[in-house]
Length: 112
Image 1: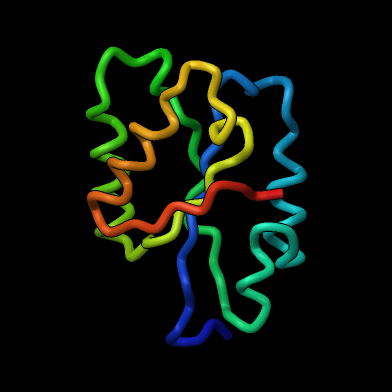
Image 2: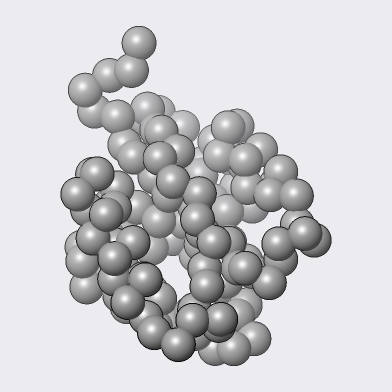
């Protein structure tokens, strides 16, 4: 049974890895509480969202703000971004991170 102190987490990946990345590394690290999830070893965590960043294909950042608002509404205050976003070739990572942080969401750069 899930406890009262359950922490909700989201993971984000880059849309450009769709069809290339299996996302198994993210899920394995999350499920085993290893790599960038090792700090949760003694906590109950719930993967509440697995989203794809679309900042490169969208002409607006409105979707990021809407996503962040939905996270806050659903008590998701930690977002892990995959290395595919951390090493964003379009240099959009900071924009995404700043939007999440402005909503009180902590961003952890990495999953596995």
